[in-house]
Image 1 (tube, helix red, strand yellow):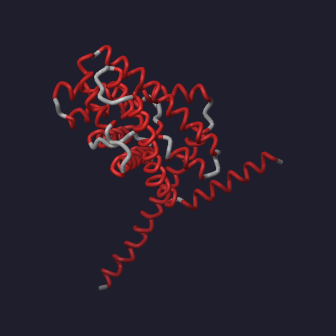
Image 2 (tube, one colour):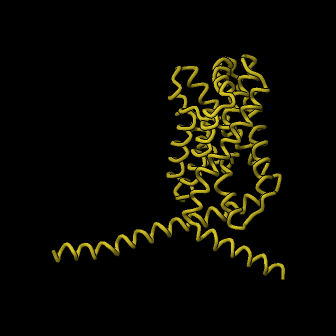
Image 3 (cartoon, rainbow, N blue to C red):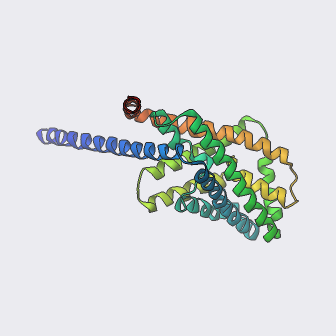
Length: 284
């Protein structure tokens, strides 16, 4: 009996130590996210456009890999594994997607390190630049590799016909949640190997489950439209973009970012207070 009690007493500090360590890791990750978010919100226009363009190009490389493998094998899941090349490139090249700008800049904004106009500027410029880079790459893909046009059109048709429904909205919400969770996983460690694992796993899930992602699906639809074999229109693409973007925002911010912020609500308040004090000091 005494031994059991002693073990329990010995166990309590260990559990307490583990809890403190977990709390410390959460706070360190929070501080990294806030610092990066402040940098993104304050990024000059030209680097912001360039980063967004490259993000579209990187994802289009993944789309190219997907189309080639599906065309050659007829296996969508194998093609989804090939697609992960795009997100590995996205990570290693330090480019950005519109849907990667939920957790990081919103956390900075909640901590008083940014403004709504800056956040909206980041979202709109990144979205437009992603689409522009993806559009150019899609055009080159279907001109250089005309055999892929039918495969691109068939895949694009899936997203074009999802329409406005609860199902398509939830597919978009899940896509936003998956990519935002990937962002959080990558910020949990400085180890590049760990970050690559997150990029591969989450991008495979995104494509393998055919989730509704504003940028990825737009690039696929671009390839179908530019290849001249699509049974959908530019209007269908615009509607899909608007609806998927809404769902991505709801999933990324409402389902992941807001709940993650609740876990470190004390640090959010502390950071906000520090920002107010810093602003007050600069004013005087």
